[in-house]
Length: 193
Image (cartoon, rainbow, N blue to C red; front, side):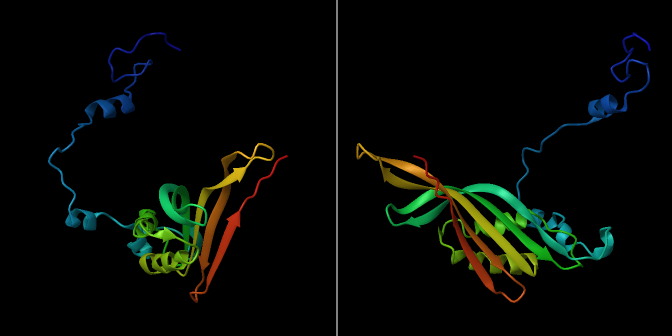
């Protein structure tokens, strides 16, 4: 092993050409300050979901579940105590695909969901969103889960003072091939004495 320093910034310690250093040095880094996103530009972006089957290697089998999990945004909910409240919500959405599709453009799930972001969220609204997932993504089935921490004012046991306790909750919806909708509400009530 040689202890010699490289003779050039494009050589490694053994004096051999360092391909990584050369490539990094030869790249031109420039940002077009005048670039503007247009509909034509967006339409020109490749969409792997709509690429024909022969362009993507793989077995001709259905995809049982593919999607995106844990993107966050503030959503509005109804509360008996507080009226409408806005809660930070973690969203996970998935779809099922036929054998001809090898995957989806994950941003489609987010973009479709964002069409509903200004609505007040209830378990029933999930059905409308899931039907749109099926339509926009060409899927047979879809699932959606919204997780949040729900505040409930609680009185202390002895002093009668009130403070907020947060409970984990979630709205979950599933829709099948026949558009049969199933809704679930999860609520974790944690108690300590």
